[in-house]
Length: 168
Image (cartoon, rainbow, N blue to C red; front, side, top):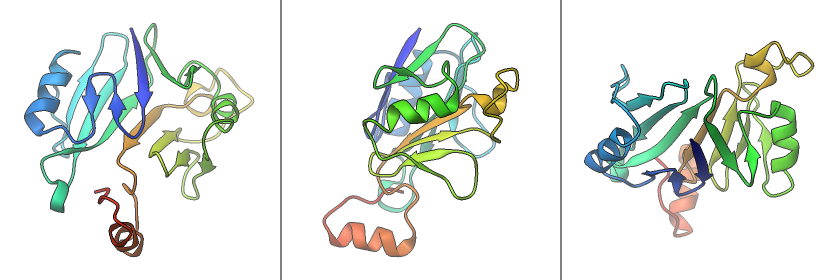
């Protein structure tokens, strides 16, 4: 299967802003639901590709505010801007995507984030030169969320004052 990342709207049948019931229905089109310990809903396909949705708090309570996709072991492809985000080495993904979006290195991990969209690429550590070290050489998960998803309280207040929507 192939799935297209569509920040800040969603991934495949999953859309930001969906109600819990709508998200449950969309996930069930992909596979059997697996509730997580943190209360999210998740699905894993036979290929290892996984999806989970997180729900907002405050004014976005009960609505999907984040969708995470995990790297498959085989077959399934996840694309953004025609880049296979899990099938190409992480630094190549970043280089190709930077032609289209402002993707910056995260300070606290070995991932990269485009905050305006909200698109985040994550890997547990950098092992850029060793393709056999898949967890560092390749992106392991992608997060699509509402812009402002990781705003500080001051940034959230400024976003609301400017007429934006809360990201949480």
